Image (tube, rainbow, N blue to C red):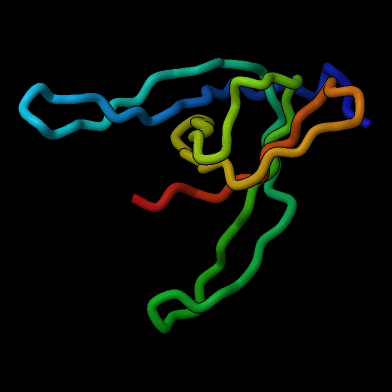
Length: 106
């Protein structure tokens, strides 16, 4: 069970949008969707092989109040860390939502 006092981290949910550049192409812009209080945890980590090297991919869980504006693929900005939302879960009463995230690869 999550309590409201556990939400101590200020985050921003960012969405990338494609905009026309007027010459037949497009550019990518980022806009902040919401800036809620949340609890950011790194409860799990997994190891894998990327480019023939052993690598640790750390997943994060972000707990926040339910908000239907968040979508898979959005970016959670927490201090200097940018996490990509991979899955969204919520409780039965839709009071809380849990975002399963991984670090953004640039």
